[in-house]
Amino acid sequence: MYCSVMSAAVSDVDAVPVSVEADISEGLPVFCMVGFVTSQVREAQDRVRTALRNAGAAMPSGRITINLAPGDIRKDGTRFDLPIAAAILECRGSLPAGFLKGSMIIGELRLDGRVGRINGVLPSVIAARDRGCHTCFLPAENVQEGRVVDNIRIVGIRSLQELISLGQGEDLPEEEMADAPPEPESYDVDFADIRGQEAVKRAALIAAAGFHNLLLSGPPGSGKSMTARRIPTILPPLTKEESLEISKIYSIAGLLPSEHPLMTRRPFRSPHHTITPAALCGGGFYPKPGEVTLAHRGVLFLDELPEMNPAALEMLRQPLEDRQITISRVGGTSVYPASFLLAAAMNPCPCGYLGDSTRCSCSVKEIRAYQARISQAILDRIDLVCVVPAVDYRQLSGGEEGGVSSAEMRRQVLASVQIQKERYQGSSIVFNSELSVSGIEKFCPLTDEARRMLEAAFRHLGLSARSYHRVIKVSRTIADLEGREIINEADISEALCCRSGDLPEADVPGRSRRHG
Image (cartoon, rainbow, N blue to C red; front, side):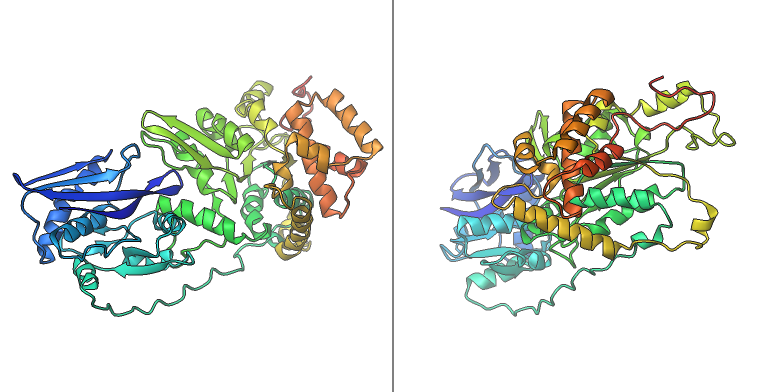
């Protein structure tokens, strides 16, 4: 006897519908599974066999063949346990024929017949809805996550016996699903906590308003990490589409909080500087998303940038430029979204106190070698380079006010984002940093004085074409913050002050600068 039920496999950051076909025929008792399945999926035959027996539905005798179609898509994980068991139950008559027609079913089985939670439920439910399914059968622990998706019925299954009871027409007791508490809108940190450093706050404001990459260079304890960790407090809120996009990624990665199945805050990822290239950008024999994808639509903070693995650092070139990353392995090629705001921090020299003759003893050779760990190709992809000076005692002791708060800065960011939203309406562009060359020509008009200044800077600073375009995009954001449609000389000047084709180096008596 033959039957088929629908399930789903995870592919990159989406789910692909999979038909789980079961056929029971006469012959020796053999359990055969085909359809490009991994060893994890093949283990399902032992879990299914034992779970059926313990649920009071003995395994049928004869040859059982399970096919997971289409055969050119790799199937991995334990999500196919429940659909395999359901297909077998329908073949043997424990479930009425057609009971699961128009439905999708996924879940892991325990040996006692219970159904356990799985990862990747959100993209699977979205795939089921888009496929036209009216119902999705999920593990009870994943029901709250599944109900994030509209226009599809979600049924939570705790055990195989519950599934059989549903097939026999019995109604399961409806579990009261308490509404998930909303994520708190306030943050535990605020830009008002940072004393002084108004120039640094201004750079952070520009970065947040246009989603520009930011590099902070300064001595230890000057507030670089404090600044980076407060950038999420001034970013604009996520749209519903962005929330679903991020939630799908975290669902597949198994990082979606059960109490908040729909992420409403922009991610902030801060991996240690010893992170490997695969952990940062994704990879493995079968590619999985890395930190650049987990930071999608949010902030990726890389502290101690020169201390990072050079191979990992250079792998940032593609995602910083293309806002996605392509990973090719023997097991397949995956494309993951990676549109993030890079906030990086570094010391100006190995000891960190460059310019302080009483504390810094680094030689010119050591300084150059240290700063050369960050290649020009990476620097070219960073829009804003800001020198963070040491904080003096009066600022630290409270002799000065904390200055502008996150709430005030966020109001400025939101006003700028609204201008960008209206400007780019009908296009895929959200922030100024996403402008293409043609977009720059269309949306970034310059005054004659601004053009002359930009031309002089291009010649004297030796800007690359990429740097030239990034200066204009930063200028576009500065003009938006000031409410100007046309970019003027002051906007270009500030963008150039926040832009460097090389790392800043302090003047030290008796020590030549990098360019002589």
